[in-house]
Image (cartoon, rainbow, N blue to C red; front, side, top):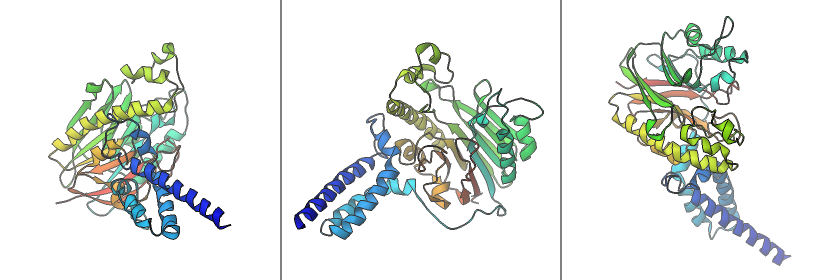
Length: 367
């Protein structure tokens, strides 16, 4: 019996060693670009799951293998950078519908073309806009936005303005009637659209300088290239009809979806480098809203968020899922702020009208 127990413990210990090695490998993601080692794309995606496994193993080691447990505790601590990026440590406080005096409420949301199209007159589009209205935002940043005109009501710029009471907008079109858009309660002093032309993508980074009651705030908004994970493998005839992919169309002709992920992750690094240069050049307090299509343990997120505050990490709790599909750990939508902005509160409501969840944040500009 004792020999069976010894064999069992040895197998558990061996499994713990394997778990530790996988965990340590996944801890490299903030420091090594997928351009240099693309297998880290997968490690970043699965880091929260590996983290939970490593936590479980460390507890087992403390109970059964005390002699070696300090080694595994140290190994666990080596993932500090990823841990503080993927998990929010601020539980308990409910989001207050009434804003504090001087706060600015920002709603950021990938609306997925309002989960409809020109021929599918789904009333969910109206539900989504009424939801925006109920949040009483001062600034709205939408990604994957298209205007759809049908009947007396459609998800159009004018209808969003009418419902939310935000009179100003700036639409950066990647193609006719598609792109990212900013709505504001206050006027724009400056508006710019910076295309990702260096990597042959039609989408862009947009920003607008907004004259708030206190000071000028710069608002960035963008959507990094979709990974097209849910798109089926296509033949050359069909793929040539697609927009927004340009030189990357050949990727949809490959069967391996993991290969697609690695391909687009490298593309995201190039986009992130361009975005970061713009963020670093700003002399104004700013917020950055985006669908990154990259998780917080990725090189892309770590590169972009360096020197900035993440609203969710400042006031949120848990993994902060924003992608309403696949794993519950996928936080691929963010709201980052410059250091001269304070996050007062944040929430990610579980509204399932788009494949993404909205981020609602109250911020305060420091004097």
